[in-house]
Length: 496
Image (tube, rainbow, N blue to C red):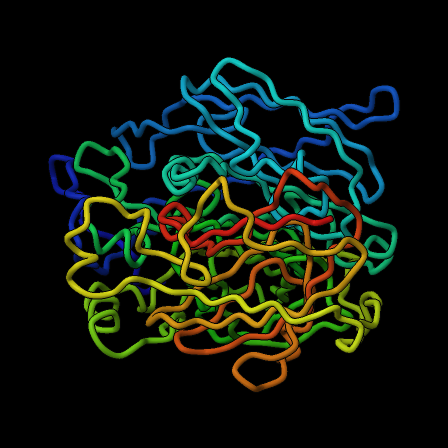
């Protein structure tokens, strides 16, 4: 392999000490010391009295991201991150979540359609030393969803330290596609997160007001908690289910030799037909499900290319460009010389989607995303009044929207700020109708729970609320740049 480009802040010196807190980005061969790819442990729970039961512990821990340096972390049943939970559509699950952190937290079921009281948002706080046991039937199609902290004003910090994990849902239709499906063998989960480190190896989180404004962008990319790992492919046809678990960074994913791959799924499950691509953009919280042919037995690197974010003009554009938020770097090396042939394949047709008619929508809901700009923001000690939806900052005592159960809405999402925002809506998987006047690309035709809207652009999405209602407990909708969410770009939605 040639020298590779990584998001790194410093190079290990002869004394083994690195200055990880620097803002600059370096290029060096981080693959010189090969790190093994880590597959998150699979946890399928235990069936008791007709319920699939999972036991989770929110805990503190330590990780050695760099040899000889210990990083204080938090995780779920582990020092950092959590296991991949797995269940099937129509399973009834119960999750016993014990909080052993020493402070409050929550666990939100991101992408799930579920009762509001089980959602795990800021209204369902898990106090220290207590246990929260949500129970609900899985209504979602086959997909890779995830779970993570959603504590008011602390989501970004807790996710940054490691409080997140994956949840794979299966159904008969997806299992009949013959896609690669052997977990950890030819079906590989990938959690992408970028992090900054201090010189002692500790995480460095929000050290300046610009990081609040633009979201925290790290100098190192972790892949399932490992920096620059090497995956040894076991099969010639490999499926990668990829989560952008970063707080704020966008990725434009592709391979170092520009090989094509097939996109088979998005946030909410499989597409109707695979889409052949060489690159795909991934906003914070979004997921993609891709299949890659490795039968040529060549080494290849999964990369992020320049162009992941839409550069805006003015102060924000200059700052984001100057700080290196949009550049090319390497993520993961894949070796395939020992890959074996298998029976999995990508069929021409995957699954069928229901037909949604926009004329059936009960109305149009206007959602405007805004940031307070100018030097006034830079000098503020509080971030709670700098980020807005429809001119208002998050207030736990205010309901911002009321929707009807068993109905569709069309949401008109207007971004009146100079940077892109990924809008996430709880308790739904929606479809994109248009983005800035154009129809969705084939790669945008799937079910989504997070839509990214570029600066000064408009997206129309068709949003269903199908199964549950609650006149008192709301769901959230918010920007999934976590520093923006914590700073007020979040609203509350009742489904009645």
